[in-house]
Length: 296
Image (cartoon, rainbow, N blue to C red):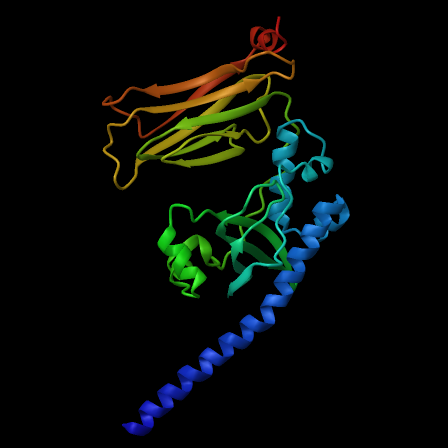
């Protein structure tokens, strides 16, 4: 029995040592990838950006830009703040699952917009394509309302990372979306959904998910002349009462200075009223709509 226990302890220790070595090997690779991506953004080097960015992310970024009728790839570099440098941050861990990986950092994350940064969490995501690690995205997690988590991470306790699915690699590379045509009319879908999850699909191309939200997202591919389809599915979230008010809208945006957005579609339910679990609606971009967008 004693020998079996010793053997089990040895195996556990060997596994932990292997994980540490794997983490040590992965960290510099991921950090070089991030640094290359950051350098490409700072230098506004489109070729370098494409070379180090995951395929699905490149297509998503392109689709969003052309849906806003901005130039691609020039608009890739129109960011509100510079990507943060890793220097000065405390490395927490790298984690890998299949062709996906994450690297997490804690500290005063500086986006170069002034002020005094506080200690927060930065989680970088990567995917492996063709044997090469590529940058996917960065998630900034404010810890202002999570004082205990901030204290834990500062002390090296990584429980929050291990218990938060978004901080761990999924093991699956996201599907690459189809390339959307440049928008003719800029559109956004707006949802107010306290206590509910709302999934919206516009023209079978632009897919959106809102959970307990009050926000808007760009419609990929924009709106088109003639009929446009809006599909939606609604479900109650844990903690929701099922009686909350709900709003789903699609707005069209003018390119003429001073012209207000045009509300093209709306499904709205007052508090306490029944809500459809799913439905399909339409809105039409006709000559009258175009005249409104032109400010006439």
